[in-house]
Length: 113
Length: 114
Image (tube, rainbow over all chains, first blue to last red; front, side, top):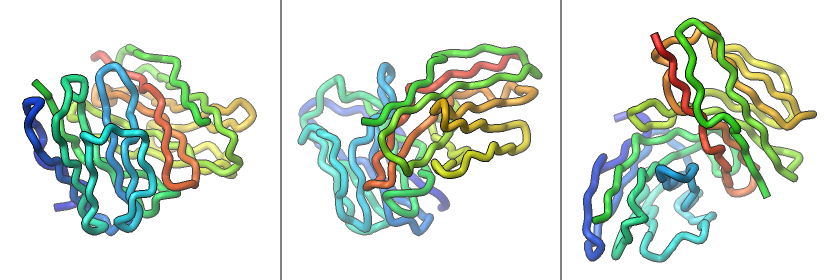
């Protein structure tokens, strides 16, 4: 595997379900990110991790819970989501949190019913 | 506060035409980075170019070129002799050096028709 991978690619869940999105980067980067991309809104930065430590939390509702067990893996735990949370969730990584370009995964298309 | 404006929501051109995608940014930082990303229908954003705020040299990469003008806070992207495969959504982004905060424009959807 190379680059940034995300699983699953598609997810349909009910509002009472609990699910997790997984991201893995094979680039040796120290920073990882979660973005939300909705049809009507630009890319929204959700969380930033640098060396497994959360350095940015953009007022994201608590029903989204990130986890970064090591610099190569990033999770987004989902629970009691709302239909408006349906979106494309993109993971990215970069060499450092404060500089450099970001490399994105293919995204998880989430639909909340 | 940071802001990136891509005024062109959608652009449609015929193959072999040149096309310029505009990007205007706002920031109070003196040190920052500018980026362009391409998002094809598959969904994955692909990094195209990075420019730091101290480097105003224009850059050319094949049919792609970028014009960074600090005086007008613009970082425009030109595709020469466009091809159908260039069809995608293109995002301009601004990033400060503090904890990786990135601001993306709304994107410009480029359609290149044969």
